[in-house]
Length: 429
Image (cartoon, rainbow, N blue to C red; front, top):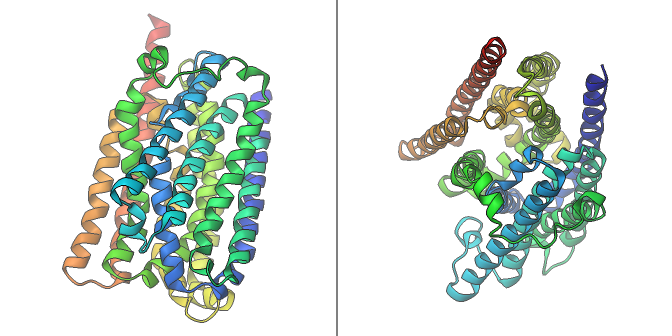
């Protein structure tokens, strides 16, 4: 009973904080869509897609070991290691731009400058740092700090984007710099909470080449980081390739759909996933039955709660988007109608998407991520080669996405049940 009460308390804390953060973003969107054009939103979409891809691999996936570490000292050392790796790789990326002019921003977003590159590098470092620190807070179950950081990020992001929209020299990159400011605020709040915690004393001298951590958790940088990279690229591929194969206006409209529907899904699902990961990692070895119960409960509840609202929003999508965001944005509502079922599948499955890591099936996760990555790329490449419209391309993408979410759910179900069988056999022997 206490465990169930604790789960509900943590869930309410995370979800409420994430909802407040999303309400702030949603409330500001009608203003932002009247201050910035679809083309500028398309450039912004490519910017944050690149940040999202790079941020998840800067720590080489060591952050996933933090809740699983033997004790709090080791967990703190892993957290510091993640921050050191993120800082080092970020410096390397900026140095490559300064010395050789090589820039992902210039390739996918458009023009770049030293200031844009500084903002980009700061965004990816802060995003990676916040992610690593978030796993520490999952371990010590300080979910209030995570919620506050989310709210702080949204407030700073929105205020900066609105403020820069009226400045002639900064309006074209106001969305990007707002993202940078928001991520910096979130990372700082998380770091301050981490640094003040009594359990992290003595961990600041952790070296990036710490032998124990690398030997104990070598599978994470070796296998998991590759899998996480494939997953991140697959998730961000639509934004990047829609901008490349069609136009920034198309990717901008898609980005607004993601922002209004996809991002709320991700925020809510991530809050659930954090609690699921925390609870499942505690019980998977000795009480896998509890993990199975939680797995089914989360997915079933989300489906039953969300299916009707999704149907209603999808039906009125174009009218709703034009009314809220102004003329020219009804295309985003049409994209919502196409992607509605895929968004529903994402909401249901994303909270339990870490199940293959929890059940020690990293290679299976790599296989799933690799297949999905190739499938998504083929969808956009073939659509471009055969001259399909953006809407037809998104329909194919939605069908493939639904298939892979269903496959992930079934794989998780299978491996949890196998853990239960192995546990029963161990008890009887």
